[in-house]
Image: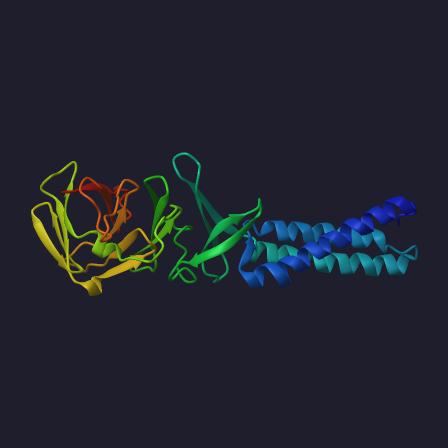
Length: 286
């Protein structure tokens, strides 16, 4: 039992602040999709609260002390169990080349929670941006079946596996400032012919919302139904067993004319939806 009144008051204030902190996380932050980046912090605070309350209210009577110790042990075991299951997680923090931007992925190892991407808010919190498809059942980070590629230093392409059959999906995270006052369609901006810088026999042609992709001597055709826009600067093109799937990102040097079509000399990055560590190729507008 603590007899010094100053220590007791100080310990009580600390315990109260920690309890308020936990309450704000549970009842204010999480309902608004703000989460601790590292969940172990929550359970570490619980340990501090349990220990602080024990010393604050410790009794002089032996039988009460025994009961209090038993209660503390129960709470410690409960907290440790939650820490083991919910606090055991994989955190991925990927930075752009000059450390200006970051993508944070948070995956629970043991729980069937969906993996989320977070945008950092402060030091220890993150705002949920999106969830990864299939991540409640298949843990892509745990199995090292994911890949992050940065394009132009301000757009990240996340490729990840969604099930045991090997299906892949991509998500695009853009940190590029946009000067455009209204939404526009990337597929329209791509109108024209684009040639790969390193291999001129490979090219991409866009017209009326459809794509022709020439790669290594083969031609692949895609309709509007195969194309999904993500954000302002990118599209995902979904193929099949006979056609490759890939993502097209407008690079930072692509300028639009008055019709929202990329001017000659602008570039795009074409990234395959694959986990074979192959990087995207740069194509130039002709």
